[in-house]
Length: 131
Length: 179
Image (cartoon, rainbow over all chains, first blue to last red):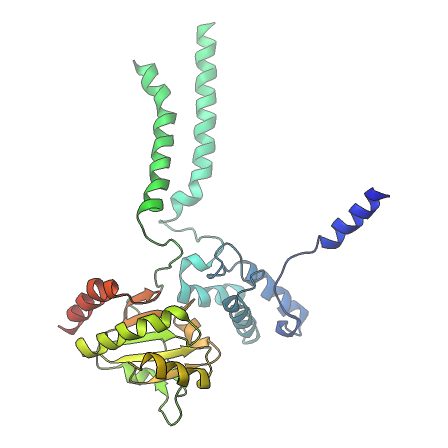
């Protein structure tokens, strides 16, 4: 019995987290869906770990409205992102752009993996030689 | 000997990474402060109503032709009250026009607040929706911009202007731009 109660309670709280208010949402579901997608790619600069879709900050609410305005005005997803990026810089994008200055940022996981593989291969070859 | 060196490479890389992480941790700079994406770009259009009764609205035109300082502030922002004195000092000593933009404020609050802190601003624009702030890449108050004679943004200061900031940053910058 306890199991079912606990299961029911945990499912009740397992809701997706977003801060969009009903009166912010666009009437056209396709446009609203685009707004949600774009919002997830923009960083809230007040609480810098969250995107503006989930952040409860005032600035995030303003930016959500701005995103919807630009969509209604006919901008494409890229144009909306570029509009906000031109004002706040690269850091406002959740995914850092791939540029010469961020090449190392993007490449490091691959380099680390490659380096690790190289070391394992090297070690094995040495072990083989010992036998 | 060669084997020892090779064995020490992972340790060396690790120490390098530790160094790269520790240096920014202890250099005293606030990592949450963003540099302006609009440096050396023309200041965006402003068209705001007056924040004070009977005052004039603020537009981009007002900023042309001279080195100006634009300060985004709000009466509900505590550090903004603290920097009012410095802004007044800056306006008087550097003889530079200081314009204010009240962010998401209320005129009644502003009136009382200005009576308390003093008013260093030539004009105050009323940015009720906060949209002007977004156009300028402002993400919190206070933020202070220095605009040159041609209307180009030359510097953005995030956070209140402290006496140190005035002495070490604003004074030399304004002197430089006025040449």
